[in-house]
Length: 318
Image (cartoon, one colour):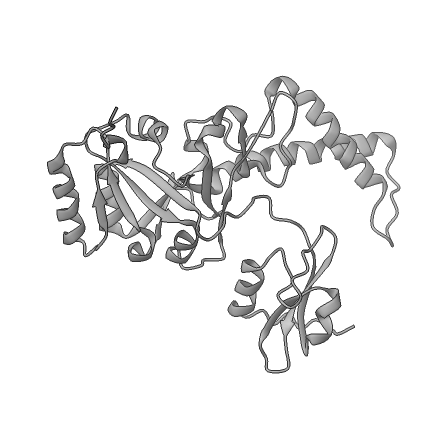
């Protein structure tokens, strides 16, 4: 087996990020616990391959035990929408940046939660059992000589540290939210613009959002999964990718970044608007002149996109 060189170029890291679930050579779909191999071929071309294709590597940079992402990535063409008032739209244009809100500033107090408070004792019992088992069964070459009382004390300390870390992660996780839908949503107009006369909806795609953010490997983009917290806990590795079933109508796709150095309530990340914005729709209650206003503002900031009235205002016949 080749010795790992740990030479991870940006191109190689991006290749493995973009093709996380599959070997790029044979298309094998990785399963949890498989080994993925990152390295370079005979022409120094970057490769991300499975065990069967690892012989193609002239140089092995690193090997990983494969673990699935905690979120699902939409197809490249999946349509994403962001509904906002006109002031936020102008801010988007003037800054050429997307605003990522800190997780603990969301209206939903369950953002990043592991479960319901009434069920916390069951959660604690499960974690304590896990910590005790880990302490009593250290890695090969180590021996646990702790008494039962010492193991209990250490496990409880780990539980306290875990809870403290969970609160900290809410203050260092920043999120930008989108609605996934092939069509304009009447419900989203109600929820995020209250049918304001001066509201707009920006339409993009998963691929364009990813490209517009510069294919930044520190930004994760994926679907939120909705679960029943009356019956389930959230896995410790994916709290910001899970929401309660009562929010399922949002069909949320979020971009997420973790920054432990920031103590601000939000982050503004540069974004290529010419890639991001495919089309702009104005509120169903907007007057016709508002379309002209949005077009004028787009022109001022050098954005050439179609501005359309809401499709909800189409007239029926009987």
